[in-house]
Amino acid sequence: MLNKILIAITLLLAVLVGVLAVSLANCGRKTLSDIPDAGTGAGTDGGNGAEGEPKASFSALDKLVLASYYPWYGFKDSNWADQILDPPLFGSYNSADLKLIKAHLGLAYESGIDAFLMSWTTEGENPDKVLQQMLDEINSSDKYGNFKVGIYYESVYNHPDSSDETFAKDFSYIISKYGNNNALLKVDGKPVIFVYTPDQLPVGRWETILARVSSKAFYVAAPNSWDFDLGYLDSFDSVAAYGDKYITDADLLKAYSDASSRLASKGEPLISTIFGGCGRVQKMGFDIDRSDGKYIQQRYNVAKQAGANWIYITSWNEWYEGNQLDPSRDCEFRGTKAVREMAASFKGITAAPLSGASISKSGSTIINNGKQNVYALKCSNNSSTISYLLGPNETASVSSSCSSAEGYLVDGAKVSTSAGGY
Image 1 (tube, rainbow, N blue to C red):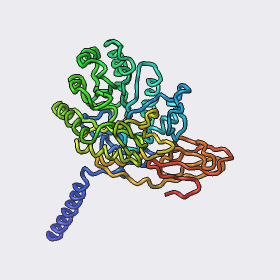
Image 2 (tube, rainbow, N blue to C red; image 1 turned 180 degrees about the vertical axis):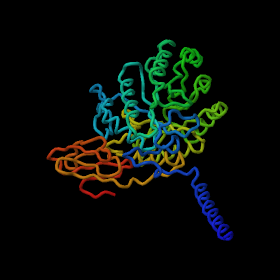
Image 3 (tube, rainbow, N blue to C red; image 1 turned 90 degrees about the vertical axis):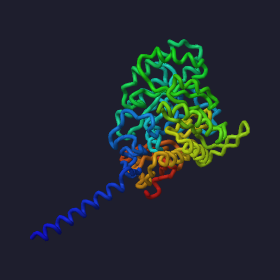
Image 4 (tube, rainbow, N blue to C red; image 1 turned 90 degrees about the horizontal axis):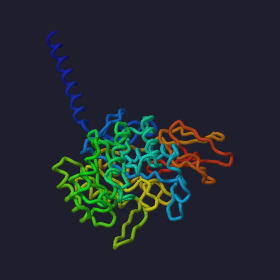
């Protein structure tokens, strides 16, 4: 009897040791397949928030991918002028269209972006209204995981002659109205505010301006280039230049090193910048090949070498300057595909296969009977837009002239009603 008991105990201990070994082997490992399917809230959170439970605030040294977002479009006819050489795949949209907001949020989240930085000017203007719409949409849905929206403050650039009181009033408004909103980007509990071209004001004025703001925020200086006086970091928490294109890799790495030496002692994040878009740039002696995400990967390698904590992409949709990730007629989804791969590498996770995509047509109805979001859904025979986004189990009505439909996944793969799912 005693021998049988000892054997049973030995077997039980062996099982427990095996379970513990498997648990330890998997500890800290995470892939996108650990996160739900795209239509039910998939993305690339990469451990920044508990699964299924949005995180109210990040810490300063969390790995974050951000993209500037411009809510200017569709409010006047000149917004979609002929100067835009590579127009949106979604067509000439209106930034306040909730259907567009949902598509942008879904696409950015699936791309591995953690937050938009919303261009903002002043209280009550269109960007302020679109900001509220976007925050409301994030808070009302579980489809966007831990996605947030930060502030990209542009009034210094637009009105550099404004008073200290005016700037402080804007910051106070942002913090008081949105500071407690769970969808607002916050670091250590403080709203994140990027300030575009702060160097239009003398460095000493910023201490006075920010002293007038009663509540705390996390302020990031966003000059036009890395040729910037780091003395502004006496008032700002970090720095992230708007663009990185007209600077060599070596000079950019030197700029990161200089900034890092100031930031590390304060425990603040080093923020790298990456210029989006897919067209070729030949200017100021530079010949930049942005096709197929090459430039994004090139600058990401520099960011990795520098030990960046955050990656800031210019931009999601600055169509006038041609540096957008937002799908376009010529680039299609190459930008989002490149960022999805980059974000997964940056956060130390593996992008899950986008399997199970399928759409079908029944009479005058298109049905997403697959597991993935389908974007830029159009009639195959006449290219008329059906929907910016068709999520799993969603339907869309089409005219009798629409014989079949096709759309895209986040990585640019096409899915159509005339082909089987994959």
